[in-house]
Length: 413
Image 1 (cartoon, rainbow, N blue to C red):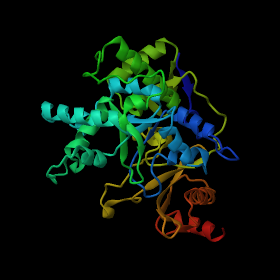
Image 2 (tube, rainbow, N blue to C red):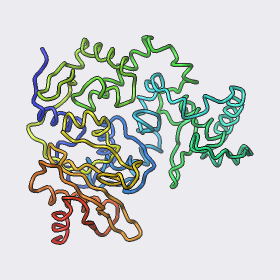
Image 3 (cartoon, helix red, strand yellow):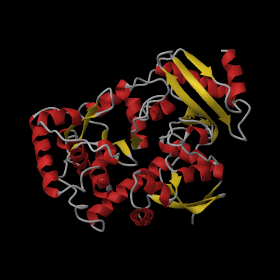
Image 4 (cartoon, rainbow, N blue to C red):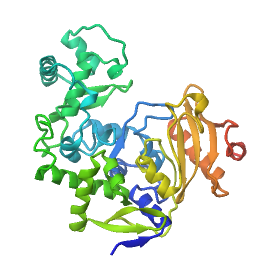
């Protein structure tokens, strides 16, 4: 029989699964703490937008507060690797043990050079692999120079105007043969052979080979079960769509996996009053008595990946408006939801002005049912973020219905 829960209980399960139900740890944040947080999240999306901070840094701030970002660099750049880059929800840091499973189920061939004439692609791929095998990590630009490759750019916006070297590199990345050893300060990948990055005991396959043994094989089914089990643990409770979306796996295959995980006792059917879809709770999911956390969430945070889930579970309609013309934006350019206890109560459009050493609150909007202490708690969070970013001041602009209260709190601090 399916367990019956209230919507508030489901929220708390979801927050606990994401490590957002409690106040942050006191004292210095260690590499072990950051590692445990990443193990809980399973996947952290990468995005180049740096309006506040690179997006992969923000989920750790949301959960841990003022931490040293060099810890992430070490986790992603030193042996044994605790995180590596591959396609998951989008371009992401993943746990290395998920790499082989994702390789079976991810298909981003449109990103690279799959459309190119095979001979051209394979010739360039061979030259790239030989160069990486005989030397250290290189960016696409460095490899272009190293290979003596020249071509006339098309300026047609396809593939972000990548040259042949970059397109084939991304094809090899999607095939699992190369990955990122690290990133430059300009956020360019330094490519290396995947076999040099995977921890001992994990081997890179030569190529996907179409999906290797095929989507219906025992190997592929076992891989999907591991991915869905991990996604369900990161959600605590959710729908088929929620779990499938976490690693961007096919919904039909995810549904079959959920049936197997229910039969194996890893997932349990659940019902939530007010959330009228088929739901499943992971057997390890925890239901805290109360949620006491507070966090500003990146637009790419794993709690907000699936917008329909966010609206059904938290009553929070959220769309990132980076690609919306300025005149048509409702809340701002880079808007972060604000979580207070067990509700999303506000949203703020933020920008780090590094030259002036200011965290700019360009707009602040409260939700209709935001509690009375929203402005006070939000300012405390903004002050913490400013400290983490090395900024001196929090400057509040008058835009948004929450701005007057927030400015008043800022004036007193």
